[in-house]
Length: 295
Image 1: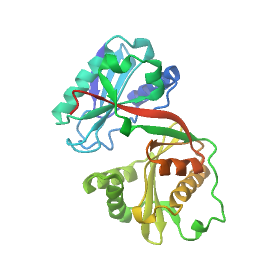
Image 2: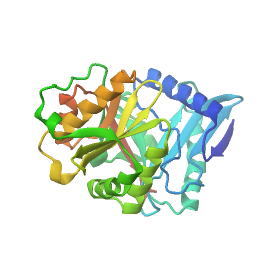
Image 3: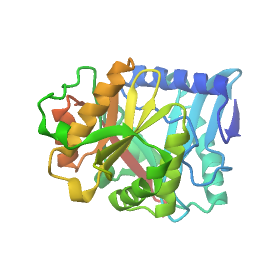
């Protein structure tokens, strides 16, 4: 077996990684789709992927999602082909991954898993010396039968949904920074990268010339995934969120999209209710795991 590092994946590696992800989801009855790009990482030269190969077959993958500076936490996706588990592949990949993180002065990280996986593997947490960070859990939600926007909805008269353009970047980044509690530089990079990505559509919710909300949609092979979605604070509690997501879905359906997905913080009952009103259903619970060496 060989273990290699990659800053970005080439087309063949991306294809292999997607195939590995599908094999794992089928075997474990999970839904997670690992993000296969370093586009949002804080350090553009930091190795983002650690790959484990048995001959020419990809049997392990680690993705380090570090979208903020070294003071913040890194999200670690680490998976191994079901046929090759219990062969110390995960520990070898993590040793290499941890070395990368420490090189870039990251000392805090969480591993991503799903509730159904931990239920099927009750000894996993103890064997790996991990604990669940309950406050960080979120739901994976998806719909193939979204609920349509009522044409008579009064919000049609006062709101508009349009593609993001460069002249709105500063305004969106400021609102994004407030909504998610991150630095303005991080938000600006996030919004700019989403706008520049050919596989992503960025939407604005406008009331007149004011930005009321924002969302980016990643066009994957199997689903359109909504991320970075927020309604700015002055515009909350007025039905804007439900209107926004229904309107985006209507636009995307005209372009041929059929399956829509997102993640929602398990404690954010308001957001979950909004998504359910748009037709989304909870399919899985994503859990975040911390080790004692993360501090």
